[in-house]
Amino acid sequence: MSIVWVTASGSASSCFRHARRLDLDGYLEALARRHTIASAWSQFTAHTHAVLGPVSTQPVPRVPFDLAGPDNTDELWHAHRLVVTANLLGLPAVSVPVGTTAGGLPQGVQIIAGRYHEALCLRLAGILEDAGPTLTPIDPRTAH
Image 1 (tube, rainbow, N blue to C red):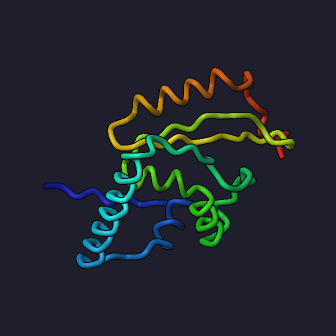
Image 2: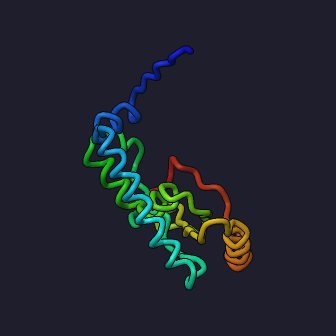
C-alpha cells in the first residue's frame, strides 16, 4: 500500500486551516447530523417537488475575495448556502443564468429537487431558459 500526501496552497490551504478538526466521535456526530438534515429534506421534497432559490444571496464579489481570509470564506459559504446544502446532501441541483445586474454582473437561480429527481431539475431548468432572455457572455474586466 502506498500513501500519497496532498499539499494545498492558496485558498485551499486557507480553507483547511479554517476547518474544524474532527476525531472519530466528532466525525460520527457530523454524519448523524447530515443524516438528520437529509431526512428532513426528503420529507420536505415528498410534498414540495423542487426549490427555486438564488445561487448566491449577495452580488458576485471581486476576485480574489475568497483569498482575503477566513471571514470572507465564511461570508461566501453563507451566501451560497443552497449550493452548499445541495452538495452536502447529494441532491440534484442545477443553476440557470437569468440575467445580469445593472453593473453587468451575472445573476442566476438554482433549482434543487429531491434525491433521484435529476430529470425534474433539468426539465425545470429548460423551462426557465426558454422563458428567459438570450444571454451573452460578459467581459469580467468591465463588470461591477
